[in-house]
Image (cartoon, rainbow, N blue to C red):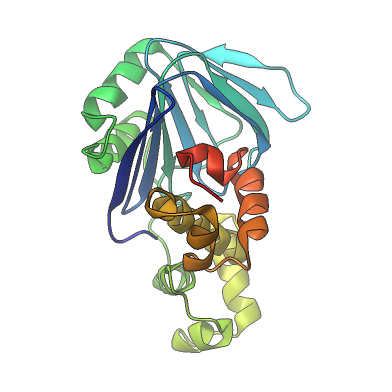
Length: 244
């Protein structure tokens, strides 16, 4: 659970990149066509091209193209946008579960872009989340014990011992892990890894990949690179052009 907004915008090789991370949502925008390799992320992803199309290639399935797409959490896929685009990542509990990807037509993509209002650091993530919930429905409220466990486990400087977090809510560590997975559909360890990755990306504009990895709690730069490829389908240096 991200509780503070962090943002940056960069110009790199005639391409503009922007990152905004706030409560419940994260945005990455790129001013040109781009693609990512096969990956799975523990969040909803909404890809909104600016005038182009997005192609999604499910792992083991047939590729399809649309004006926009909503990709559910833990859906293995590769994808590519044929134009500038915005990618929104929404907490997995904020939208109702559903099978497979949801194609968006051009009018819906325009509505979501209008809700954002900006594809840079001034993007209105709250308005985009509200518009998306109006289109596909909202998620269910979480058990307060789950909320506590996710908040404490996914802070930038998280507490190390799941035993302490479980004790806070009167559960054993195995029961707490099971409760989070039952409620959210994703293991707590993956939610923690995702939070660390977002923290690392937030720090890429300020220094090297190695520094961002260390600040976000990764063992080293290689650990961050493996995580970024697995969860985002691209290496961290390609996200902001950061040095090694």
